[in-house]
Image (cartoon, rainbow, N blue to C red; front, side, top):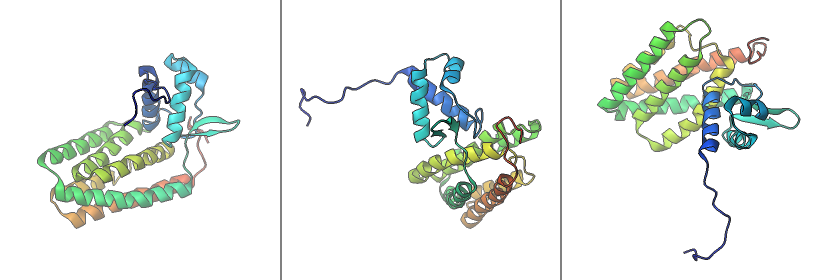
Length: 235
């Protein structure tokens, strides 16, 4: 037990501004408002959010720890851009985890999970049908939400934690390529995963999920071989 008069580092209660700035910037990056490779200046962000540089600086430090931004000497802070090797490694792991999530969801999903899965896929399909050409951000968020719902239906806390970390990388990759969420077979592959899960067909659920990841891993790797685009869309 720590003596009541023991001295140590003073506890500093977090402020709402500091936490709010961090959460806002994190959501903006994961939502594609700031794209991989885009510079994040403290002064510009402070003016945009109407706060001093101190909470901006602290938020950027936390985002660096989250793996969302990179800081380089004399180059400033930029949203992280993954190289081909990192992307390949990410999809190797995602194939295994998504396959596991689908197989566990097929075994353990509840009626409430089934309803949530159908709703998540319906929202994604509606967004895809209504999206304007080049409008990928909403589809990306709903695509991630659908896969997150499968993980929730697996009812495995360790898997949930692992996939939460992996989703950060996947979000960056999706915003980095920006071109494959409207792939023609997306709906069919998602529907195959959902049908297998709801039918409690464990082998089919696992394989449908893994095949879906393999399909998009190949598309992403192909995108990364094309000339690099700036955040504004120009080569």
